[in-house]
Amino acid sequence: MPRFFFNHTTKTGEHEIDIDGLKLPSLNNAIEEASFAAHAAAALADEPTEGVFEIEDEGRVVVARVPYVASPEDEHLEVTEGESAKAEI
Image (cartoon, rainbow, N blue to C red):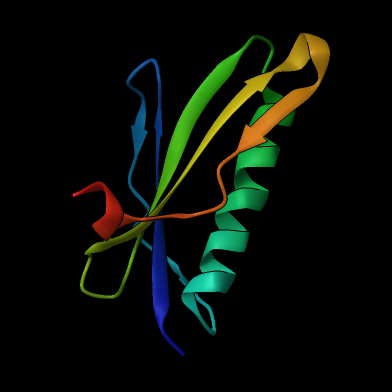
């Protein structure tokens, strides 16, 4: 099973590198995991927030991005379900 890494960057410039990663069956599962993490980040936010989870493969190559925007006061979360990294190059 391949290992995927989930690096997180916020609009304010905070950047967290995933050094452990997760073994998942496919990139689709990794995108689902990042979407779940985006919802969790939004639930913990005290103010409007936005960021992106970059998914890397075992070679530490970005294979997908999952951006999100959250507004806690209106409980709205917009998650773009997995953009291909190649589409952004």
